[in-house]
Amino acid sequence: MITHDYRPIYEIAREIRKDYAQQGKQVYFGAVPYLEAAASLTHMSDKYICDDASNVLMYLLSNLQTWRGDTARRVKAEIKSMLAGKPVKVSA
Image (cartoon, rainbow, N blue to C red; front, side, top):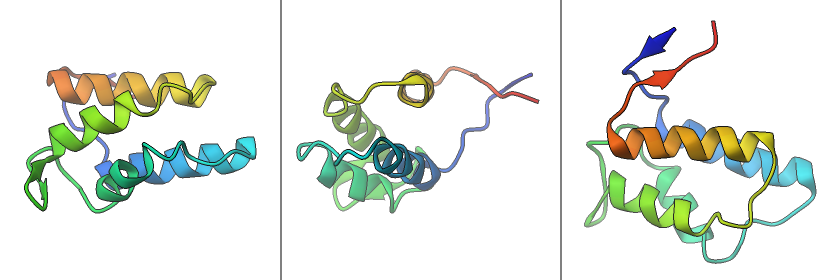
């Protein structure tokens, strides 16, 4: 099933933190401020202080380069789709 609806950004941030915790790792220090900002966003039209959600997600994505695994690949692809405005595949 393909949809144009995206998960709330704060859910993505929560999943990133959860996966890091399950791996027994700490979030890369450069990603922490963007992850905290993402945790307060819901939609791509939201802003965090002066930054658009798209800027927050771009910076977050660039600072998650060391995050690995199946969850990381799936979430990074989801963020890239959101940034490109493409539809997201949702498992039914």
